[in-house]
Length: 72
Image (tube, rainbow, N blue to C red; front, side, top):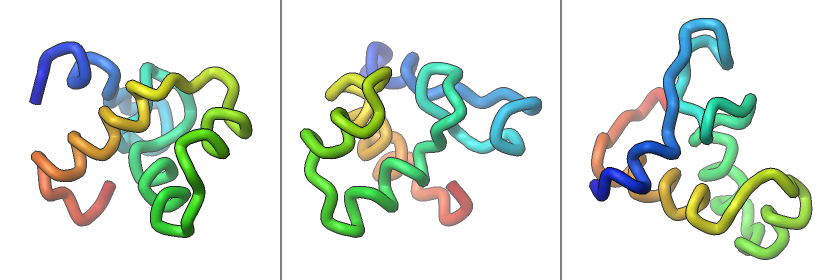
């Protein structure tokens, strides 16, 4: 995983139960993946979560693919 994308994923015990999140925000990698699985486009996600960037979505996908965590 590229370091730039990897740096967008944070894990903090006091946020979201220690689950992987995007840039220290209270949105989990699994939230992004769930939105995509439900058919949301990148554009829809970015409109609904104005603090997100396209690279955050890419980071979530790459993190999930490369870590193979079932409990994101």
